[in-house]
Amino acid sequence: MKKGWLMGLAVLCLLAGCGPRKAEAWLAEAQILDTDQWPENAFTEEVPRPRQGIVDYVIDGSGQGRFAVFIRDISEEGREAYIEQLKEMGYEEMFREEEEDAAGYMLVKGEVNLNISGSGTGMGIQIRIPE
Image 1: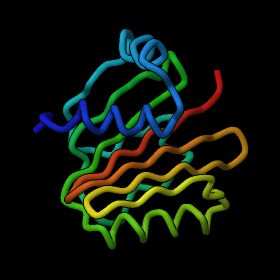
Image 2: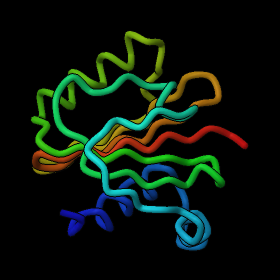
Image 3: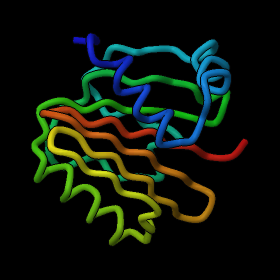
Image 4: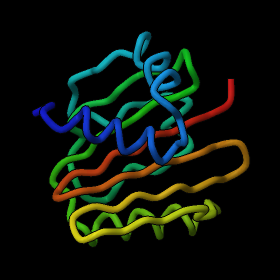
């Protein structure tokens, strides 16, 4: 189940512009939580739950102002619909990179930064809120 979490996290870190030291600092205190429920906290209040897919696991780095939710069983169309839903909520797309098998997005609304990565039937949503 978690075999792709390192790759997903690496993509999120690259999109966030964090180097290895910043990624290590965040991960040193982060907790990986195996759950299939959409978490309810200050981070996830900033974004809607995707209409498609199932929560696979979360990485709780709330002590460093970060929280990530990883979704499985979501299609490329489902990811695109989620990005559009975020834009309708007022998020501005700052960056988009798409390749044949993967895509990455950076969106901002006020002080909330989202880094979203997708590949195959998976999607990672990293939410950053300044401390």
